[in-house]
Image (cartoon, rainbow, N blue to C red; front, side, top):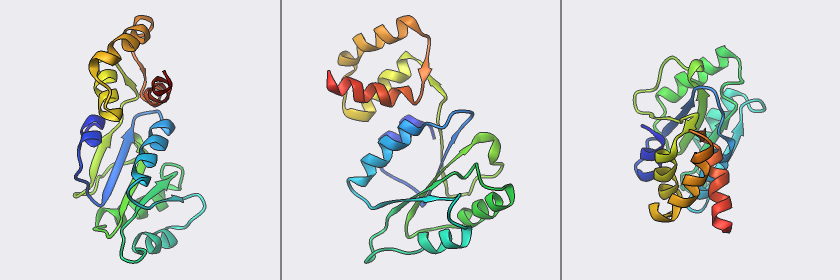
Length: 173
């Protein structure tokens, strides 16, 4: 699944794997978690600070039966043995909560059978810019044409994460 499909799809599996080749898109994750916080409890688990067994207990727990979203940070930073244990556990995870994680493409060799695998681009071109911006905030392609032309006269592509900075900036205009 690509990022546009993720942004426009309402169906989600219990585990969402975000992958990128080389760039961690911090602005994207900030934006998307803010969107989800409007409708579901979102929790961040930093795997540098929480061991795998504690993480397993957390994601199997709901508050008053209400499922939440758990964002697992620093998956690529943990030891390879712990990463294999985590990914093995998640390959069979069916809920009750939703688990999101990000890994660099080189850090994962096997993807769980029921996971949604979302490949994030490192860079986007003008066409992708307009499509993604339209999916983000109900921008019309006509209103995006002028800013897109200005940006892409200077560059062939922009970093995927820059899209979210530009989105916030264009909201101010």
